Image (cartoon, rainbow, N blue to C red; front, side, top):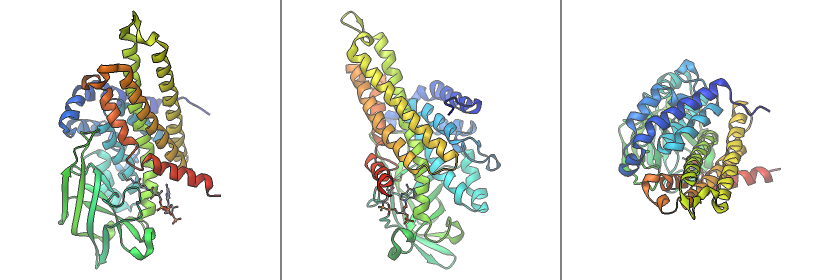
Length: 380
Ligand code: COS
């Protein structure tokens, strides 16, 4: 067992940290206020190779492993998890699925521009009545000659307003249940696609979340990924990897709140001494550090299993559930350590607390992760 990072992993971690601490920090509070999309940062991070970190270099990706990807997402999310989620979704929910299961044509036409960051991808699974209960897809994809015709509504779509490539999950054969679901690659300018309002979120405000509606949208048959009925399996496999990214994001949010708490505790004085010298505060820091370390081990274990080509669905569910719940606890404690200062924006920790909340909800709630984990325990 080797807990050291390779030179390449260390390099990507440092590059992500440098960009986050030098650039993202400058306008993160302003973007939290205005909910403006981080266009400039996504362009810069694309040029640095972050939008396709794990994609094979032959499709213009970085060719890095999943550990490197988690290190990048962690460092970016310490400062700005809105940027973290845009990178995470593009890499693990969209690029990964196309690279793993798409045809050579799909990879040339869609993966290459997404890996470069010239085009952004979005993953369209959730619906008004199918979030956790993902098999209950109402969006339909009905075969018609050389096309499928899509009708329905997707919601909570990360990058829904900026992405130009959509992976759309839809039901083709309702009588077959989840085995009748398909997945399609669709361009956002196809006639009949309309984008709903920008969601005014509690946290991660500068990531771009929309609903997307389809009215008689024609998608060429060759844009279906995999065999007829492969869509649900595709979505689950893709989410397994996505959850490693969100776990890394939660780890970053927790780490950001922890770093600020340590610094504040060393500076702020009460009762004649720095508050770090009060055991009430020192023990909070200790509990935070243990949970961060646990989260990191779970995230890296899941990433390592994925890189080894081994089954990682339970490991990714464990990493996501633990790291998200830890981030919620740690950020709440960080606000407490900061007292009144924690409750105002300029100290960042209230923002990190709002951001942590979303990691317990998207890409499968903490409760869904417990379903996955408990079923894996009880299946034999
Ligand atoms: N990895 C691989 N395959 C999986 C899987 C996973 N994590 N979870 C389920 N599957 C497979 C099952 O093995 C089953 O396949 P077979 O029919 O070939 O045996 C199929 O998917 C259906 O699974 P299941 O019968 O367990 O379906 P359920 O309706 O009971 O629910 C859960 C499965 C709850 C795990 C699934 O609906 C889920 O993950 N929901 C959350 C979705 C989500 O994350 N939404 C957030 C929005 S996306 S940003």
